[in-house]
Length: 192
Image 1: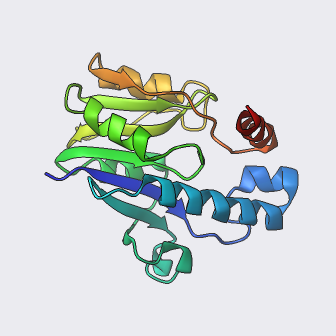
Image 2: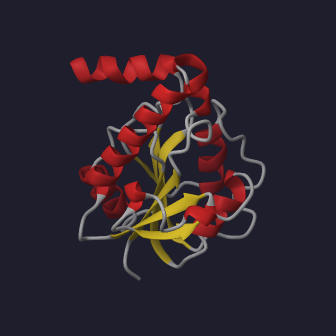
């Protein structure tokens, strides 16, 4: 099976994306930042060595968002992150998922993750908030794999990696830009 990278994305609709950040900086600025981060991630991770697919929400905007033109798109299943990730990891072969919250991610990271899956069953890109910016697996994953994971929690990565067992590779730690504190931290990292 050909390696596949899924980018989990929301349509850039004011009030629907980056809601935690919007509480700190306002919905207009949050929408602008989200669109910029999403465009940057998409631009930086596309590569002919793997298929890049957008898993998008809301499904009725599939094919109607100019920011997504030229990319293969599939609708996200409804529900929490548990069924959405389960659906993406139901395919056979090397599969990666990322979001659009880490504008630092690039094709070098994705290539390293696919390389890691040649030797290990799982690969994670840890986020400094306790979650992850990338998850990869040689699928399909068993049903119920994500059940009970505490999403958006300081133990999210720990919960998921515990289910993965010992066959794990870990990539570099990045900042998930979800709130003003993380945005400042990301901007500070750009200065260094």
